[in-house]
Figure 1: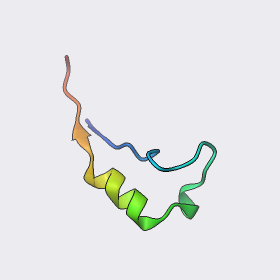
Figure 2: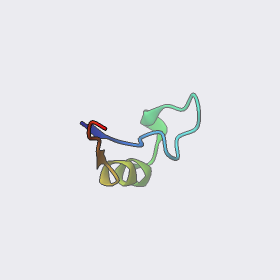
Figure 3: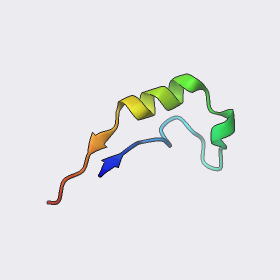
Figure 4: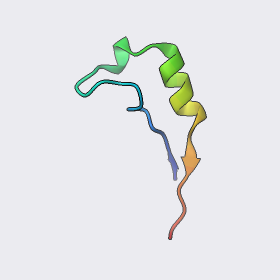
Length: 37
């Protein structure tokens, strides 16, 4: 499963519509695979 820290840099209650493209790009670039432990 790929996970993203999309909330990184987005205020609580914030709307992704108002999030800048750099913040979204960084969150997508930092995606990580999660493996069963």
